[in-house]
Length: 502
Image 1 (cartoon, helix red, strand yellow):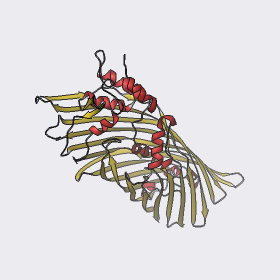
Image 2 (spheres, rainbow, N blue to C red; image 1 turned 60 degrees about the vertical axis):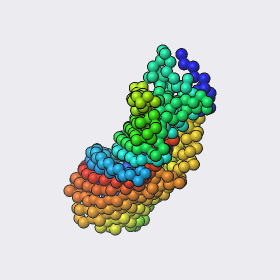
Image 3 (cartoon, rainbow, N blue to C red; image 1 turned 180 degrees about the horizontal axis):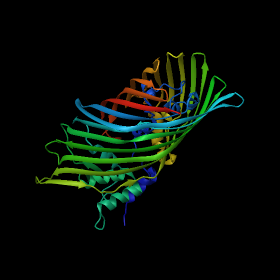
Image 4 (cartoon, rainbow, N blue to C red; image 1 turned 120 degrees about the vertical axis):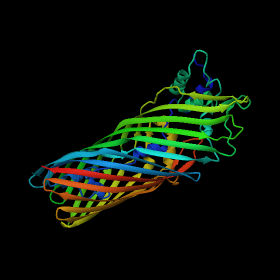
């Protein structure tokens, strides 16, 4: 039915599977940005040497045996995010907000085991948001260098007109599906552009050429909307050995669901351009499950507390689905106007693959000022160049790129608490360093927070307010149209936690 000889040669060298995930997207799945209890958030998440908080169990599994009472609780949160982009000197701003159930869990204690040597055994479960993918970004400006035609041209390398044609007994949907199932992502991009008359085939050079002309630049509008969450579930066991030592283990499961919708529009091409407008829509859905474990310990030395936690890599088993369409508006040599929309209405389902995130080492210290308050510090080391995709044979190029572009980071969390009888006042600060070696995509991210809590005896009520700042650059596409937009993001969280003792 299909005779695609040149594609078969390309397949021999490139393999049959091509992932549509960029390094930026894979990094988003590997970065932990937990949103937990209000006390945890108010103190910047600096709980590695403290414990006594349900979200602290997510940081150091030894934390659960620090509790003095059985507890269970949950957290409600509101999030408001603003993005301000600059693209070729042109600003754009967006805002979005959401309400969520961010955390829930409980801890149960068994006291005085092992002839006094084991003071406490604790068991706990906790579920909380490990990362939120909700976002809305608008980028617009006049690009004087590139158009999206270069993205499609790059994906057309190695193909000819026969490879991307629709025969008499074939349909657009059928050929698009066939190309995706047998020859991957690039073949489908080239097919969309050729069928929408954005690309034409030059028999003299045996390559595709663009019909878009933009000698004076082209107006571009790029909208990216994403939704989803990475949820982490802790199954914990911990013990207090004698008076001053705590040890714990977490067995964690993870769930990822992420939906990203991109619409890219271009207009105001050159007067002599056959192409007048381009609209490219692309949707990618990623889902899957993961597994990890944590080992941790806490030691008390009078007023000083020291903590150490090892986080294993998280082994995710993921799948991707994509949905695409391309529309062009054009004018022929006779002045007739055309609209060509290639909408295959095909959902591409890619084979499952494994993502291994890097391990982490968290070193913590805290000083306790009796019943007055405390100061706490966490230092986290994580090497993002250790992100790996499998099967290795399909991702060797991308794994090599990850190793070359990403690096080790040292991140910090600092928190403080002042206790005034039943009332507690809290503040915190955290900072995450740029994981890119050449600082192309991220700058340092930081958050500042404050909060308060009141102990009613058997019930505790905590509230926090935090601001997360991130200055980064967003690359429009991974090939061809690789221009960068500067984006300043401000993320505001308000958390309310209700804790019950029993």
